[in-house]
Length: 279
Image (cartoon, rainbow, N blue to C red; front, side, top):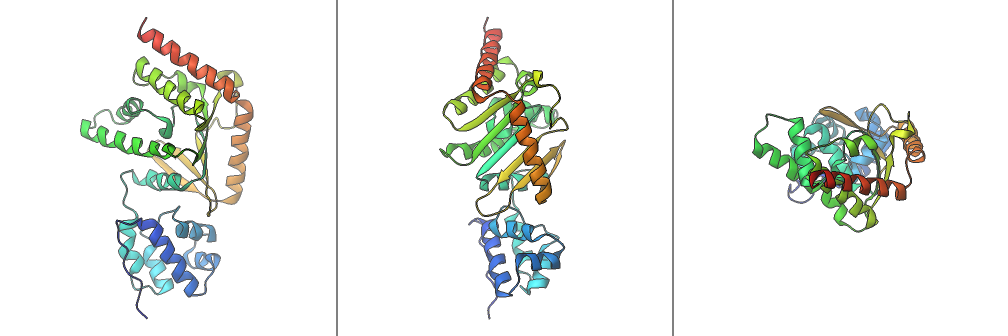
């Protein structure tokens, strides 16, 4: 029987790689859990590989070829499936984000990437890398703006964001940049494209004081959590952790202002920034 064909890198390599994995696994009579045991990962992880929400790690490709007898297929095609414009620690999260049906996110210190304007994204990236060449900053901003095009779709994904008041009051890029950024957010909210709540300073101590969180749900794969820190991050699919962090997000929404009051606060701050810039 001829072996599987190499993937065409131009035609959704991750999705095709996942489909081939499912095909070969089923042909071998293995469940996702059984294959996961052989690779020292969960059956959930195998399912996420097959659905294209997770990327195949280079160290796992040879193990897959050995277990499934695919004669180097996954090794040969792993590199094409993992190509990304984003840093390694963030690339897999961006790819999962693009497949998500629902994204719930809390950000304590900055406006999240999906809601940023080009000027705000430039200020953030310049702060991250003060000595980077301008061409590098341009490339990073372009990548971030490409992510925001997810919201061009009228309904998917559902984005529910809880913004800490600190993110709205930290002047990033200047007051004019902040005014534009906040008006962009309110525009999305008024078009019913995002669910937006603000966690005010008056809420005091809250359930996510230790940092940001992002939960992603998918149509045909288990949910994922993305944890991010300075220049690092990782995806987590442990069911107990997902349940715990989903409850944390619900606590945050209960402590936050209502969407209506949140919108009013953001619009008021945008006016303040604009007035200070043009007295």
